[in-house]
Length: 103
Image (cartoon, rainbow, N blue to C red; front, side, top):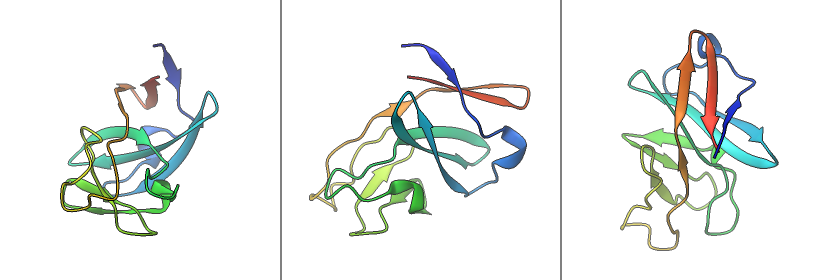
């Protein structure tokens, strides 16, 4: 795994904002929750829904297609949405205003 610089900068990422970023051909969802930046796979495991178009509910990202729910910190699927399975979560490094993800 290696750190890859993201195009979005910390000053453009707002609390509760969900955005997508392609890194090495892989689509990621990048978001800020309680002042911490997270990156996860951006494709729902159910039918490929775009998690980068999803919403945040508590500590979960919700797929806009069929409401599959994933823990933002871990990528673990919510047991109440058994139609989805876990996704990958990636470490994000903040260096000043720059964001990098370990992928």
